[in-house]
Image (cartoon, rainbow, N blue to C red):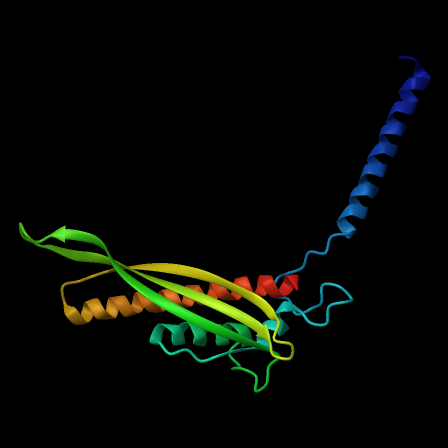
Amino acid sequence: MSLPEARTTPRSSRFAVGLALAASLVLISACTVRPLYSDGPASAGVEAGTATQLASINIKPVNTRYGQEVRNQLIFLFNGGAGQQASAPYTMELSVSELTESALLAPVTAEDDEPTAGTVTLTGTYVVTENRTGKRIAAGKRNVSASYDRPRQEFANMRAQRDASNRAARELAELLRLAIAQDMSKG
């Protein structure tokens, strides 16, 4: 290697590094990543952020205790504790079902087994429609399980099951909020 070649090699490598850096900056600037629950628009063509869209959903009443738990939690999550709007552009139909199972059986006598653990599974099905056009915006189904101990006392057993149902309702509401936010941010 001669002296002139040694001088041109670092300069050309600096040029290549600078070119690679400029190319990566161009690629990164084209990225449109933003927080899912932000209120700011992703681009000039979007009027409102996902948080504003979630706040503009009215959830129809449900007829079960655990369904009401999910609905109340969703209303709180959508609106930040402010309650539903009087007239919202979107309506959500929510259906929640519950399944309670014995997860573990312990032998009590030679003939009988007694359940000592249980699982509550809540399944939520939702459809979000636009009131003006009747167009379906989002739809889906999610489920959550919560385990609990089943003591021998009847009231303690019922209370443990209800607490597990309440935990599952809160988690199901979080999952539904995430799924609906993802669907609405795509549209």
